Image 1 (cartoon, rainbow, N blue to C red):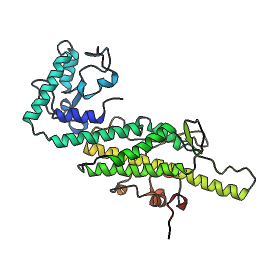
Image 2 (cartoon, helix red, strand yellow):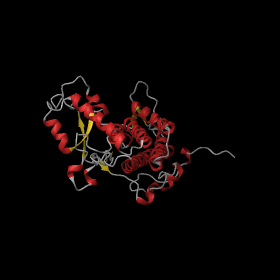
Image 3 (spheres, rainbow, N blue to C red):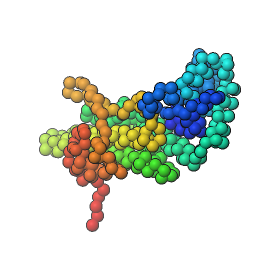
Length: 335
């Protein structure tokens, strides 16, 4: 799974962005792109190596525990190499003591904003939970099911996690320290809520199935050309609306990740890049990969304008499948 964002914020913040090697005190940065001096880039060094055959790797720690805060120490690239090249000279206990002494020095000698550090760690924990519930590592795979050529579907387990994610975002404690980041999360929540509600409108009730599938309600048990074409038109509108909301969810997620980089961790998902979506199969049995993002003029407080307005303007997005507004998906109005 790798090092979580909250762990990252804990390590860098409590280390004062300074190498913990005794006598070094070199100020570090999180990402090589922020500096021309490659020597000051910080590295999150493992005390017990990730792999058992690595430096100090023989340990009862599980793979997950090896990526936790307690097993990491912030070092410059030079001293990270030193402690790993000479593990006998730098055993586990010595490095744990070094880390503890360094963090105590930071508290005593630097201006350390405990409130900001604590709140940053909370924000980072929210993003970690989002990454888990949205299954970001498999995002292109599970969204490709929603974007399948004629029958949007989703695993029940993933559907339940997405419903849980909506409630998770609503129920968080917000410190108002990073309002743009908070708004980006709520923007995403609004898109996700509408996507799932639209998807729910026509689903098959298949017991003992691991999937939730869209019901092909245009298939009727009698010959009625007019009714068939009417239902087919409704069905095509329905699946194209699911496609377009899935694209919007991807835009909202990439927008959120931009805010995380701007306000929490500049190097967040730099290696992985933006989220992509995969659509198909097309008539020639090919699959196509797309990159979708909000344009500059679309980045408002809440770029997603709500379902009705989105149906009106979706053909102005960078990519879209359907057009037009259907009252079938909007709340009933009573006089």
